[in-house]
Length: 171
Image (cartoon, rainbow, N blue to C red):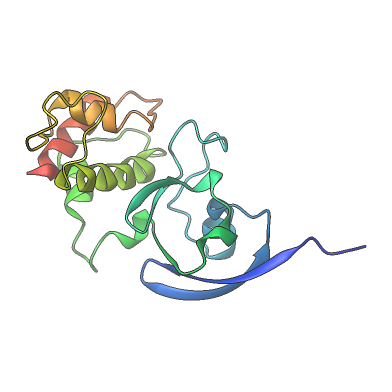
């Protein structure tokens, strides 16, 4: 029986470099969870529709379930485990705790990574679909945060607290 095609590549995950050889069909999500044992990133729908698997690739929000691991040669991946600085939580993580922006917690890692990416987009002045003034600074209004976080679903309905937490972290 022939082995499936595999590729070797280098990727940095949460600041740690890895030289890996994986089956070409391996998703980033499966690489993180099964190979690197970073289980913070969750498998929700496995079709890119729920956002539970959201991580940051070179600082940009990415659905790990839709990303082939072998496409990440030379790239940097940050998962929810890589956001804190030792015992000091990332401001978004702290805001989620402070505002009870979770219930069951399954979607929380993806929500947090997405919020970090969304806040970076805001800081860079990137407009969204609901941005009214394209010439000024983009404010983290509730409408703006909801639009930017719309790719992340919460089956428990913690949205009101999530919006508040993201707005708090933006300050």
